[in-house]
Length: 125
Image (cartoon, rainbow, N blue to C red; front, side, top):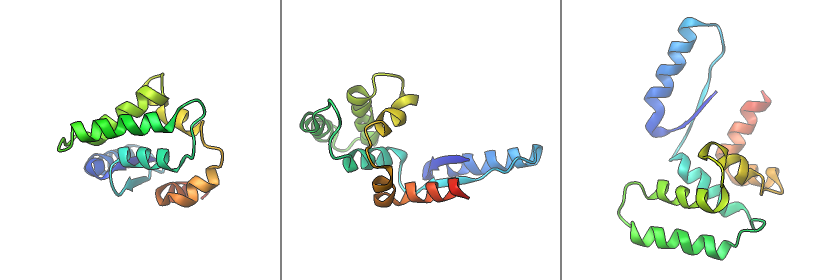
């Protein structure tokens, strides 16, 4: 299962075709309608309070980045970089694990974020 945002669609489709061509493994993909950085930021917004992390400080940092890099095409990557610094002391590969560690009700999050609901449905089938 490939999960990617729209700007990686061509690469994901090509990878799926290549894998299907050389093996009988069932390959599928889901494309997030925006950027995966948007999904990470949306998940953070849905978490009421992070244990040991002050939301007001995190919000101020994100606002500083947004104001300073207002027209930057990498603004979402910069914001996720700040989240990584504050939330995820380990490598970027662990950022989702660390964010999900703060979630008390996965069902609530899945209900609130359509993409996660689609992924959950795919995993159940």
